[in-house]
Amino acid sequence: MIPDRRTFIGSAAAALLFATKGHTMEEIDPAQVYAIIGQMQSSPGKRDELIAYLSEGSADMPGNLSYVIWRDKADENSIWITEVWKDEASHKASLGLPQVQEAIRKARPIIAGFGARAEVERAGGKH
Image (cartoon, rainbow, N blue to C red; front, side, top):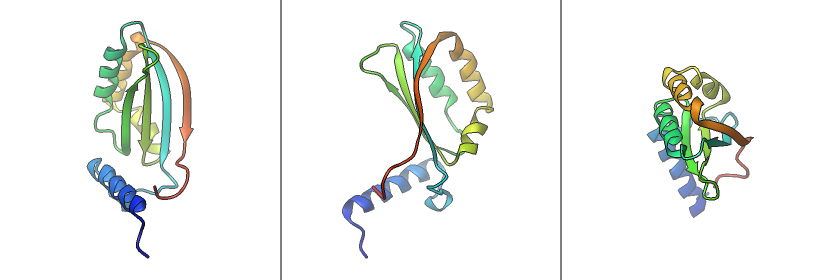
């Protein structure tokens, strides 16, 4: 059976993402993938500084497939973070990494609060 265009493109994009993060498709069990979406608020005027600290701390985290920080368009002090991990254990292990601990130490004084947080799973099939 020949895959439809969307399935082919989606699979190719996923393969590229995983390959660029040091993983092959064979190493990833879709049933084990762990994903989080969370909101964080900075102290007034400190959003870019918070983004910088979190960006520094998120480099080279084993098992991380994607870590993206988004600026909230409606709130100048708010960000959203999307994270995708090989599995939940990889996420938990990342919290002990020296660069993550340093980012937390730097960011803590300018974090004003946390908003919504959700652990999510992909819906549907291969697209």
